[in-house]
Image (cartoon, rainbow, N blue to C red; front, top):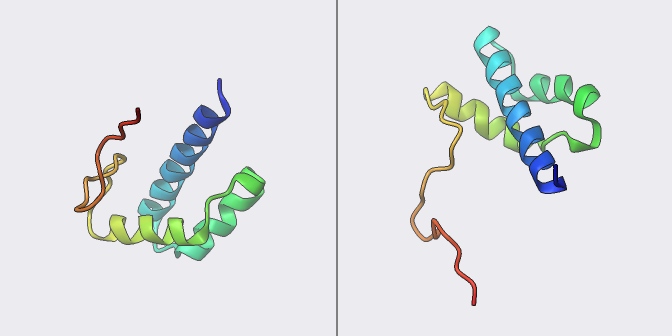
Length: 79
């Protein structure tokens, strides 16, 4: 498994744990982040990422995939 695949898997795992803790009760992004740190160490995502996910969850958005946004290309092409 490549380092990039490992990072993606770690990110998805943290997203799923964040969703689980969010659904388990009224847990703040800061508390969720502090629970992730002992498990993921220096691979723990930024608290701001966890906060953004919690805000999406509060709106009912549990989609794991990135949504297209204006001005952001959905694909990359190189020569």
